[in-house]
Length: 223
Image 1 (cartoon, rainbow, N blue to C red):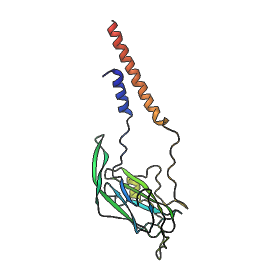
Image 2: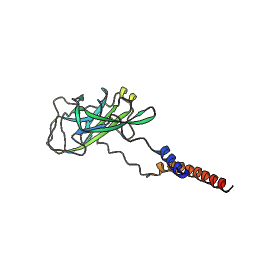
Image 3: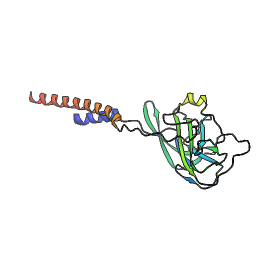
Image 4: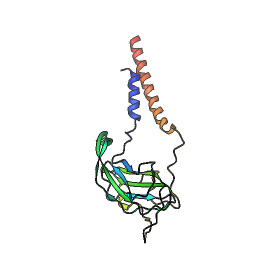
């Protein structure tokens, strides 16, 4: 292998990010992401590659921002149509692992107060301590239903135990928004430059090393 090729391999190895797969992540949901629901359903279901923590947080927001979820519960695991590959950090190295079962969390919906976009937000912690958080968005176009007698929308957020175990990642809003459903996180408009700076620095150093080695070999041959 030439010095330049070796330097290139070194640069790639240094700057390569870890695999972008979250352990214990979401594998399916009912309704599905981006789906349209035409009739009232009793509950929404989110399935993960492992059982959600007992203190996990789930919330369902109507278009106006009010919550319509009741306390969630674990549901019966099921076999996935196709295995899901995730990565775990083991002894400093990312190791692949395949999961063949889905572990659902069932979140009852008290009522459907309006038509429009609904958001299901979740926050948990995986068995390896990694945070698991995200959201599922769908559109409801069915009949409007009344709230049950004595119904009061929940206002609580993640428990202290959950926040201590796995703080919510940036861009994930777990607590109830005021007045309206929170918008999706705004993409970073700075472009790729923050990533390119360290990459270019490493490549520059690697190139300098390669040139130095090549020059040393040329000098040795001439002498």
